[in-house]
Length: 86
Image (cartoon, one colour):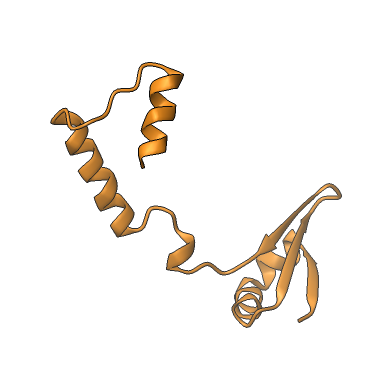
């Protein structure tokens, strides 16, 4: 696997080619000026934190909180006891 360094201007001019190379596993570093650089990496569904399943869990948790189905912890000691039980 090669590492390809390109300028931001080159990236703008050849975006499709750069995306295709990244999809094939090539490491693309996009230089922006002298001090900044970025890596072009494809992502998949596992990389996204807020997947549909995660959003459902969040919605369920919000509903449980509205219904008062929560555990209130008021001190560090209570927290330690709670954590020991799970």
